[in-house]
Amino acid sequence: MPQPLTAMPSRGLTGRIKVPGDKSISHRALILGALATGTTTITGLLQAEDVLATARAVAALGAEITRANGAMVVKGQGVGGLRPPAGALDFGNSGTGSRLMLGVVAGHDMVADFVGDASLSRRPMGRVLVPLECMGLAVEGERRTLPLRVRGTPDLVPIVYDLPVASAQVKSALLLAGLHAPGRTTVVEPVPTRDHTERMLAHFGAELSVEDRADGRRAVSVAGDAELEGTAIRVPADPSSAAFIVAAALICKGSDVVIEGVLMNPTRTGFLATLREMGARIEVLDLGEDCGEAVGDLRVRTSVLKGVTVPPERAPSMIDEYPVLAAVAAFAQGQTRMQGLAELKVKESDRLAATAAGLASCGVEASIEGDDLIVTGTGEVPGGGTVETHMDHRIAMAFLTLGLGAARPVTVDDVTMIATSFPNFVPLMTQLGAAFQ
Ligand code: S3P
Image (cartoon, rainbow, N blue to C red; front, side):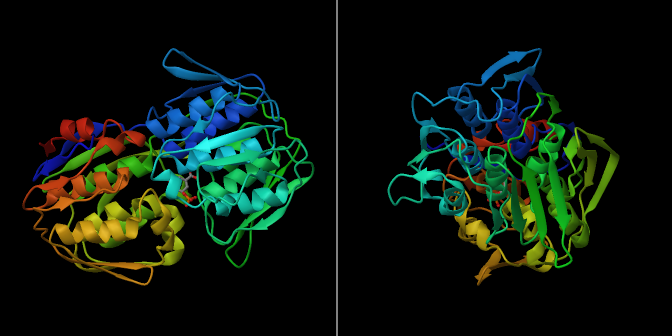
């Protein structure tokens, strides 16, 4: 049953909060924990539907997962040591879980069925199946979307693969498969994408090399027949969840908010860089490092913003933040042009279309030109509309955030999908002073 919710115009958001753990790092911690020998203790794991689906999948493949003292403990089976699942692996809404696990299953002598919800079943899997097939994965039938039946092999072949799209999910699936292949598997990305898999592989003891090329491309290479050793992982707060709080503090008058322990990996900070160019007052306090990842506290205050152009090469470092950036752009003076957003069309929904339509229903001037999204802000947002979320958590949260700063309430048609990434979004916003009905 869809659950609508209305964001009421709100002012003066204040307080110190922590948002849940990073989704990308949480998936990877569970997966690498399952492929390691010994135990991996994960603190701060995101307890949200997407990550729980990955936890169930690795458990169905033989990793033991228990809870102890607030941490998740994964007893791994070693690279190549997972066993065939008794039933289908259900990834729910999660593109990351399903694509990364295709890379894992590829290296095992097993048949596995991959299924997901209606949104995930529409998303392209060919981008990961094509290179995995080159390595030896067999896919039953002609399908390139879930549900899929695949057969892995212990005799994978290492490859060198030039990614046709900048996708951390595809890169990660190939590196995970590469752990099982003899020799080196190399992935060349057109622009650097989030590098959590690389960092975490190194943390687990894999042999890895990264080469930044003069033309801006990045080559990542992993040594196969790898041995990973269980370790401790502390998951920093998710910058893609923090983004909604940052946005709300910027647009709701009289706000001053601190968000603690946010992941500050440079492959994830494009949103903050863009907001600063728009004039946002954002300070990074206490920048430090934890488990190979940069972490800091963010202080955000209400700001007068101006429109900017966001270049296409920045997209991978803020790919999940465009809907909420578009919401912020609606409050800026002038035009914000977000360039090169083709990948947004194949996210949990067609986010390019959903964002433009949502803005229009809130009285904001927005248009799509090719793969660019153009938002014309006037400093004031009328609101008053109902936004269709298309089973997309980030569309729901972006427009609830927009509603908090708008002149009139904004309703989103369904908030149930928020549980996939940020289950306590509404309570946390409420704690800061936001109002919902
Ligand atoms: C993710 C990579 C991104 C991002 C997704 C998480 C990851 O997808 O949109 O939410 O954890 O690797 P793509 O790599 O397909 O762009």
